[in-house]
Amino acid sequence: MNQEDIFKKIISHCKEYGFIFPSSEIYDGLSAVYDYGQYGVELKNNLRQYWWKAMVQLHENIVGIDAAIFMHPTTWKASGHIDAFSDPLIDNKDSKKRYRADVLIEEHMAKIEEKINKEVEKAKLKFGDAFDEAQFRATNARVLENAQKLKLIEDRFALALNENNLDEVKQIIIDCEIVCPVSGSKNWTDVRQFNLMFSTQLGAVAEESGTIYLRPETAQGIFVNYLNVQKTGRMKIPFGIAQTGKAFRNEIVARQFIFRMREFEQMEMQFFVKPGTEMQWYEYWKNTRMEWHQKLGFPKAKYRFHDHIKLAHYANAASDIEFEFPFGFKELEGIHSRTDFDLKSHEKYSGKKLQFFDPEENQNYVPYVVETSVGLDRLFLAVIAQSYLEETLEDGSIRTVLKIPAFVAPIKLAILPLMKKDGLPEVARKIFADLSQTFMCQYDEKDAIGKRYRRQDAIGTPFCITIDHQSLQDQTVTIRHRDSMAQERVSITDLENLLLKGLKN
Ligand code: ATP
Image (cartoon, rainbow, N blue to C red):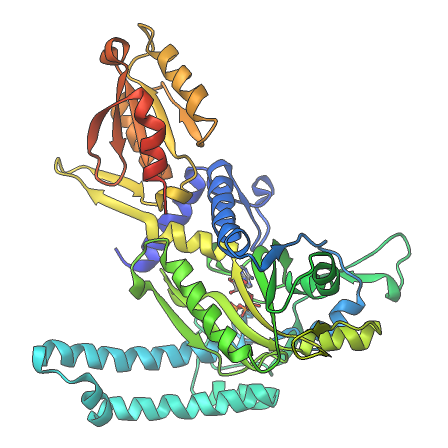
């Protein structure tokens, strides 16, 4: 099965098993907006909790807030979003399809890189242990030719973006002979900038001054509260403020399921540091965040860093943690060194001082900021995509299982009386009443036990316990492990400890 088919299966699995539904589906949905169902919301909550614990609970110098989605409109002037939060768009005149011009070029570059990698892989197979990859890359004519091509495009593209030269962006598309994937033609419009912020009106008066925006990032809610938190929390630099919440972007092209949505959730942390120390903290947070992702237990090769070639207007360094989704390596989290751009700009527009008095230096300064910003929905997609498996069993049958890391699984334990009689449901319900105090449990007595196991596999439940007639005699149950399907007999009184152990991360 190719990756595209697997991705389609994952999307339909998410819908069929109550993880994600298209928004307002009875009206045929709303483009790039999704609702989380009964299991989706549990997984999402657990992932948010995993982040909050790592960032807030485990750091004595990081605290959390929950700022409003609506903010004073000057916030977005100060942050640069009104003037610069836009993407370059281009239309194909034949198919009438709209694209992000930068993405067309990036995808073209990725194809060239793929060609190079294929050449390397081929040589690796041919030469075996004797293969010297560095030497091959430095000497092979085809690799060198493609690498040079790539470098040329990369340099032109970086310059065009930095100079905001949209004609040059179009020229690159033409020179690279990029065609519309739908019409196959090179009949492109000019490139123009499109602001991604949604606007609405505050109150009843529909005047220009009443225009407010749905926040396109959660970060600004943290910047405007910098002083409130610093003073009331008596925070000393370096310290961080974290928050999770909805953000809204009128994305030009919103495909790939929940990867790019118009309403999504971010988990962001701004770390305020002494000017001059930001690069050290930037490296620290890059590594710390990568370790956090890898603690989910998926293969390390699924993650990589990607340093930005074009820096946002506020940054002096930026890197993405990319994950290999079914449609390739794409951004999962951004780590940005934002300098003192935001606080200084808010000082300018608000007329309020947003500084820190450093007792060691005996002076005031505007702190620098290193930001970590991960999309909760993208994290959700990474987890689901990596967990989805179709396993062929010994008897030739296929089971679909979500091998979600146990500690974030939506349902931790399924409680299954073997039969609906002889007092088995009563024992099972008593176990449910006890263990649901600590774990998200599900009680299920319908259908044959094999079918019930499959249902739990499909939603990623790491443990199932079965209550049978022996349970009535000796207060034991069988516990079945999702990944190995192994079963063992354990005492009911040992269950809670066993589960606590099995759900540690
Ligand atoms: P991209 O380049 O993919 O548009 P970005 O660089 O604009 O993303 P940031 O502004 O750095 O993204 O936002 C931080 C994080 O928020 C991203 O790493 C991503 O996980 C998430 N995110 C951004 N835009 C969306 C979206 N439209 N839908 C879902 N998640 C998003």
